[in-house]
Image 1: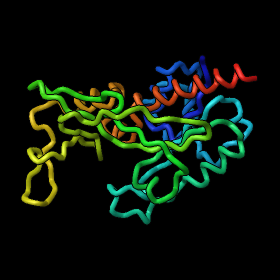
Image 2: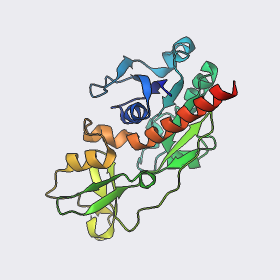
Image 3: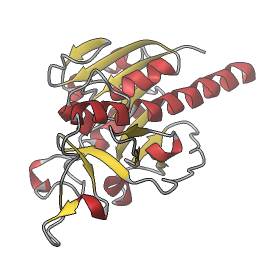
Image 4: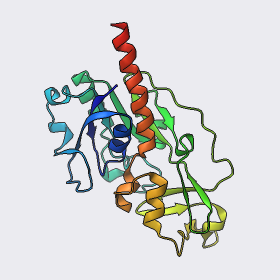
Length: 239
């Protein structure tokens, strides 16, 4: 079942690609920065300026407000505004089914309501280095929805080391990748094509390292989009 998606705080379109794979018919992204890598319809705007009549043109609204105000990866949270409450208020006023995404730390702080946790290990997201070693993506993200969403079973990393794309770098925090005697510093895959590995890990070959650092992996929203399509079908049959 096809559906139209409005993608707020869209960045370079990781979430949008997943919805496309799930069967979205029309996707429009909104961001206050110009996003030249975004591959779907795009509107440059502040979401607080959007009219609810525009939002009501879509079947589903996905929103990924910035996580810098609450993530453990940011040491200066005071410079960043928590946009989750304002975003939720706007989406509820529109009355359109919605998804609000953010990081685990933010959800634990109570900013998301009854979130569902998704990780890359649920979907087999991984990369393989030039030496043939497999690394898996964890990248836990949390999703508040206005409709029923269930998380799939998580088989875990199954003994493989975990890699992630953070701050424009691809990193593994396992012991063999650490250096500096307790400083926590890492050596990030020397001798490898790091952007290519990151693109493989995230499933985003069109994106920059910076874009992937902020992205929702497409596998996550492909799953959400498939669940939403089933939800629409159930509603249609019940009508």
